[in-house]
Amino acid sequence: MSLILDGSNGVSDIDGSASTPAIRGTDANTGIFFPAADTIAFAEGGTEQMRLDSAGNLQMNSGYGSVATAYGCRAWVNFNGTGTVAIRGSGNVTSITDNGTGDYTVNFTSAMPDSNYTIQYAVGDNGIASPGVAFAQTSTFSTSSNRVLTVRNDTGATVDVSYCGISVFR
Image 1: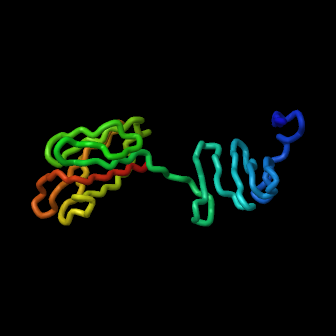
Image 2: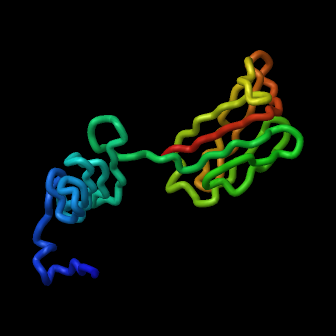
Image 3: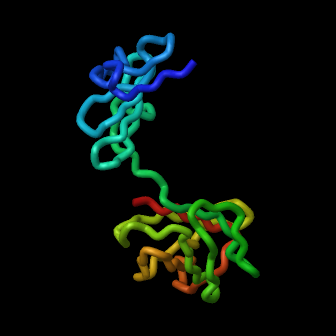
């Protein structure tokens, strides 16, 4: 049996709430409700857990006590920065360009909406943090790629590092 929710049966006139969702199964306080115009929300146990608002923002409660906009990781990569550069794992990264010793360009699969993103870095050798070595950001923040350096803190020289991790947030 199927149920079509097209408004002809009056179902569309019930917006519901977190405690009594408009669309639910046998669990009366878990389901979907409509808290505002052009907004859909999801409740579990009578508490709003997730929402898509009228601006298209995904909002969720992931243990912080309230629903707030989720700023997801737009791209990430774990790669070997020594010898022939090799990606171990990634999301939204097509490739790494090796521009020379400790100099890499991270190329995005899908472009960032603008260049106002932030990047988090981690470096290490053999999976262990490398004392005195850190990522340095170049001035190249483009929507399709980002250029970064691994630099020795004591000399400022670029060095290849075996474990490089980069996460992009926007």
